[in-house]
Image (cartoon, rainbow, N blue to C red):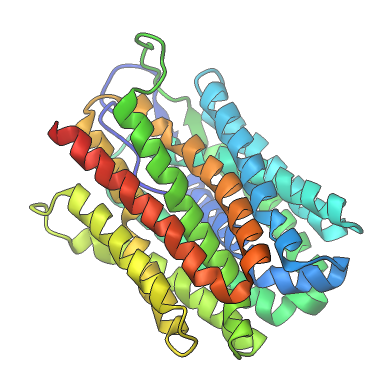
Length: 386
């Protein structure tokens, strides 16, 4: 779920951020680890249900626990990064990520597991906002290209996560999460190459988003709910229509690979095509594709199409808002807590709906969320025309 950040304020006077080569490598590794952790929950659902003797809807609480932590992490990071050095912020976030992974590895009960996931979310949210902002405001050229490359690292991590879980998670879950904790701690020395802090632009007015930004926040809530919902529920749905667990998890990795590839391909979209067209078209295609996924035979292809369709929505949606509110970098910063709210609220609603209607209706439920995303972005477009 990461994207392009407004860099219009980069040239303004203020504190400067410097990243050496070791720091850039650490940032890329952070994004890779974050992608793997975020995408691992879907293939874990069946295993968690058996391990803790809970139902699938209860197991899906991992999504809400992760994004609840991430929401807190983003909000704290928004406050802290205006006051503390970038290096200290990243060190603290990596510490949370490592502590959470260790907690998951050692968890002997379902509440303990959820607590570990929540702490992972704390580090995830702080890194999501912090790393993007540090790179965007760092000294050097081609910051946008570098941000896109880092988002690619996140995408490839999201591909690796389900593959590792599907092949090793049943017997070696403790080893996997212990390894993730060790990697998070190992990245701390490399992050020492980050120096300086973010330039701060004085607040104007109340600092709260206006109506247009509020519409975008709603759209991003539903978008993240769509992305997380598909990545989380497609494994279980594909198993319900007859696919083996290994094949279903591999196709889930295919969804995340389609997301990563789609964001790279979005770079080729001509500048003459407005961001609004890209975002609205992607939402519409995903809405239709998820309805097609109700057909068992078509479901694997429909999910891959969904991944390609929604891939550019997050970064392009941010670029769209930047275009509508030039020079207002705080507007885009609000999109990060909105994305975390979407990861908390929407998956919980999807879980309740699946428990009520059955796993066979999961694609229709996901399509309804995608339609809400489409409606919110369409409303933003209509608002601008008035």
